Image (cartoon, rainbow, N blue to C red; front, side, top):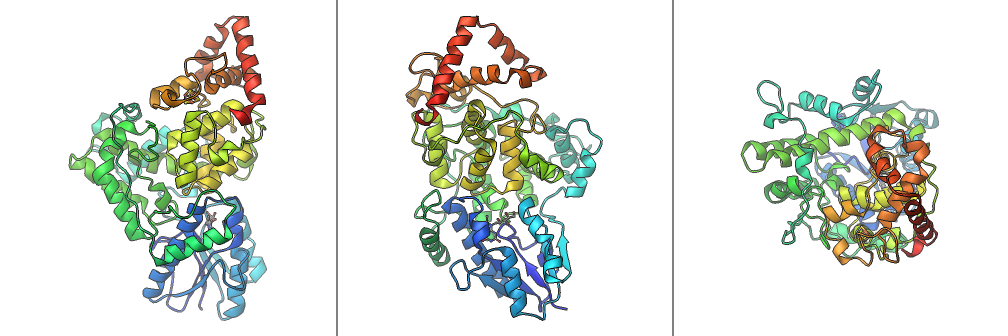
Length: 510
Ligand code: DLZ
Ligand code: SF4
């Protein structure tokens, strides 16, 4: 009774549920395939990361005595898809009489897998992905009967469930559940970033870099500056460095942005966690221990743990609860084409230039750049929802649809009519000026809303409110914004709308 165990590119965890079931006569299939590598134009770093990490992972499994069937992207015959790789392996190894895998992270591929039983006429066992703390069933049970879903209440349940940062009476240490307000300091002028750990590519990674240069030349990014971890050991080293060096400042400056500092105090470990190189429980315990040993303040430890056991698990739960219908939502009817600078960062808007150029160089930018710069701009100018979500899915090394779609479609674009966020994260240039030093280096004037050099974020912010008044005017949390809009006289309102019309026509040239 030997079975085929399929491991996907974002399932590179020794403790994966499907691997725990592996026997010595089973065959483990790992495949670099065209469909997964091209369903959006993934950044070159994302492909290098996954192919190299997959190859390293396969090596470890072989050393542990498993039989691994590994398909290289450029070998012949090339595998078009995961399904094709399964079919090919089953033909070559007809003694395999069942298929097993851990449930996959994206609805698209999960649908394909549900057909395998019929296609291959074999039993297919799909196991829960218990690398997540909250199973799909547990989330559905939590959501059942609630009028409104809010992360904060889910997060408190998860704190109780995991026992993280609780005192002996099961109350939150530090006296409150959430220290979000202490995570929003802007950066002082002399603030020095502490970079995440980088790694020199080894022979396997160099081979993959050459492969990606050859086969994915059209994809965003370059190959020569790749320096991410590609093994569990390296990823743990990078995370230990974060806890020892960066975490102390992370709490205060989680939302800050500084010119030419792509990482500031961010761990960038979502890149490793989301493909399985890190374990969420281990990460949270490390951070909790740093707090217990007085190495970091509560706002740093809680702020970090909230992202992992709160936000990350919450968006995953919502994704599976609401797919496939969720992906079709476009509450604000946003359909404007994505300007070209989203792919190269060549714009006079300094904040956009910074966020996009970091993205193109590193396949990474941090959450405030994603939400309040590129996401906010897309929201304010009404950019096409599926073009924007595809962009996020393609350009970030940590992006898989389960995490990217709710964060982009819901949180950044408010296309889900408030499922994820109680109000749109729309902000004018004043927010960006408060949280960064970008405006000091910009062609536009952040204090101006009309005139030649009016900051596009200011102009488009007012137009966004006016344009969407029928849909957003009744939102209780938007009342202050609308009051400010209605306090303007008709002439001011018209001048702002005229300027917005001008900017929207020449969006590509901003
Ligand atoms: C993102 C990605 C890429 C670029 N390439 C592969 C691949 O060649 N083989 C593979 O198994 N997985 C790859 N992945 C990750 C998958 O797209 C991911 O497992 C699914 O999107 C489900 O989350
Ligand atoms: Fe961005 Fe406006 Fe500031 Fe320029 S002035 S950096 S466009 S917010």
